Image (cartoon, rainbow, N blue to C red; front, side, top):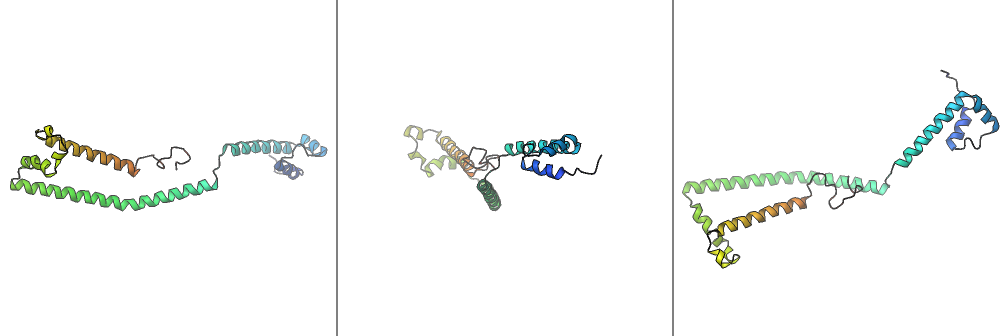
Length: 185
């Protein structure tokens, strides 16, 4: 391996970097390149790397600075919303636990006193004035309580689905309402 370079290497490198080789090179330089192995190798390597650089630059789709700034702002805002939402989730879980514990204590307390659940459930439609919402033939039916319970369960289920859909907590959803790859982070 030869460590010494060619005396014309710098001149040839400048022409290659400017993209002017072989068009503007002198006849003397062309004759030198034909006889110098180092210069031929330099031309071969520089042209191959230049072609690869052009291909890589044409493949790279650089976004505008505005799009990059917008994405950074969206990421920052989403991270802040996530940090803010963590205490709310904890508070909701705590409130649910308190409500379930209170309901359980109430049910146990009423069961010890001998509370008549059937009579209470039978009077529930009257307390809630559900008779005005149900047709008269169905109102005298023994199925009225089950109708009320099934309607309440359906309302609760639909409410849960609507809250879930509105919260945007779905995995992989990106930015809600945007289906394009550009809008996804």
